[in-house]
Length: 155
Image (cartoon, rainbow, N blue to C red; front, side):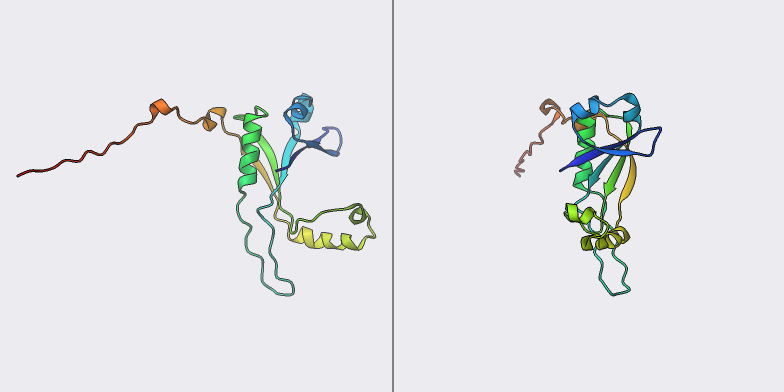
């Protein structure tokens, strides 16, 4: 699972993608942290369309394991427990590898961009992260064992 975070400067409209690591996060300034949005590609969803038909695609499935893992990472590794963060669940219509040729405007592979945007079901979420204690397992001393007692009735 690969996650990135993006940071935009408060005095410009620039965005920067950063590798999501604990060291990278702690090296950010307070201003950068306050403008931070986390993002991930959600591989569990790709829009399924039927070309040349009037059928609309089915609704996208809910966000799944990738978001769950990102939330745990932000809570436990970046110590963002009990805070609200912005998260982008990027859900392109088609997940494809982009090479240098696709980045040029005259490239024939760049024509698929409109189709990708049309089928994009990405989400911008505001999520309040759980507390660290929500990830603790109960200790074994607090569990109880039920024992079945066999009784015999004699007359």
